[in-house]
Image (cartoon, rainbow, N blue to C red; front, side, top):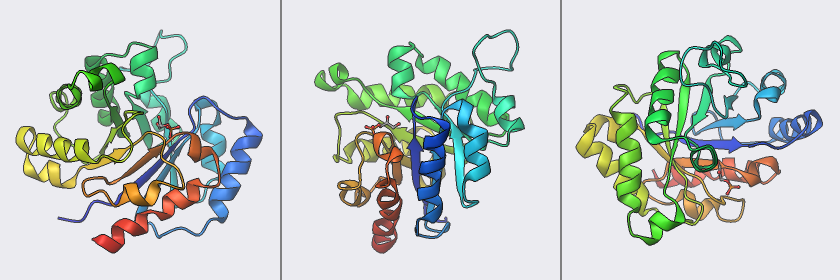
Length: 247
Ligand SMILES: O=C(CO)COP(=O)(O)O
């Protein structure tokens, strides 16, 4: 089976202006980074800047939307459907981000329905899971992330276009949950899916800590928030070489 390609996502969240998009994309376009064979780079601007970013961005980098509606579009004011993203040729979507789970009460079932629907429309999905600090302190981390993954596993059969993102803000650098998640996939979905699915990490990844994090055995990349708006995002992309060197 082909090795899992390192994945670096930049989640711009609800930040920026059209001018900021130009600035960030210029830095990315001028950057010398490892080849497409070594790293997959996906940046995620707010919906309103998706087309602008797509038009300006180098062809070896892709874009992701930060969310989409759970079903076919229609009378759902303020939502953006998976079909619309496909129509704009946006290849990726982030679903189940911890901020949406926490602030907008998106449940694991709702997120799983979104993942299934988006995949069925042909989108690739950055599916986010992660526990709250309270759950962490109660010692239920693995239980919580396994339940979130199970909700998704029950609704999809093909994991090819899924990147699983473990994103608890507190958990820099432990690597343990990634190992647990891969074992969970192995036991509950199957060895081939466990072997091929990329499990990435998000939470305060920056230019200074990315190399050490990239060296964690079961970690296949990052979803970067704050640092993806800055030139250090290029250093984070380059940390893919840590993985290729250890492969
Ligand atoms: O939520 C995140 C990425 O989706 C992580 O954000 P930070 O990298 O700013 O901690």
